[in-house]
Length: 395
Ligand SMILES: Nc1ncnc2c1ncn2[C@@H]1O[C@H](COP(=O)(O)OP(=O)(O)OP(=O)(O)O)[C@@H](O)[C@H]1O
Ligand SMILES: [Mg+2]
Image (cartoon, rainbow, N blue to C red):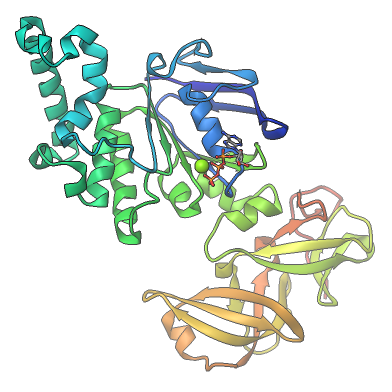
């Protein structure tokens, strides 16, 4: 098993800078996910770790040793691709065995006629058979070993690709969007399988996806990338509960975080739609900020709004989205075209609302995220100027 350490990894394709000096330390046995929008450099970074691409600057260390001079198969890593990359003319057995036949048999022993004569080859092949059988058992592929890839379902093909990675017993598994060709239901199922496989193998997993749900559900830590650098690295809950920037807040969480414009009034006190809030920030008067409010942090306000520490605004119900166990309610903001918010709620509460109903929505100010004009997170100011707490609203 092995740690992976990336230091100042830089990469350009021609004049296009794709990675701008990425530092990342991945612990032994960790499940780390690289997540981020299309084109942000995730595949390039994982291909550099695999040795399939060479960085322009910086270094990769696996298990404490630099591997920059090593070829992919010398790095103790195995890569699983989105496309599976199986050989269509070969059986499942031969596909899984391929990395072993390549490494354990000499070129001579792989030649069609000579190989029949070699006793040594027969011994090696028996060993390979046993290893393939063990991996196939773990992945429940043992009854499919004689089929060709075309005779398998998408999920089974993906398991064959995993098996081909596992059979080499690599210290590090590198996976680039391995589930994205599967239908939604199978993807959910494979998420669980991958997480269990990770536990069972105890290997280091580096997983690339642009699906934030995959990132949140499987990973020990998530590195959110954008434009070739890491915006935030942390546990899934850390990224959800304390996004370091507006971009992270918008990317992580479904439905997407609600964003409301607010302004800084006297003494740093925030104003939402012209009404003073209890929150104060260490910013100059007149500055604009964006408030981020998760859909589960919104609630209907009955009676008089404006309880201490709770902000509110009015909205009109546009659509109810029934997810079975819960509802996502979509609201338009009164007098603000094209701006909407979503609220996650129970079927009982949703049932009490009719389409186009005018409602008051409120939220606990302490639960909202504040972002400055540069998109960076702003911590609210405490009463004596310290950051990190909420100023209580005086009556
Ligand atoms: N071989 C290449 N030659 C030129 N440009 C490339 C090459 N490979 C990648 N790029 C560019 O580098 C940038 C990052 O690509 P990369 O494949 O790493 O993105 P990604 O984050 O994996 O995106 P996606 O989620 O769409 O897979 C993109 O702008 C891409 O066009
Ligand atoms: Mg990619």
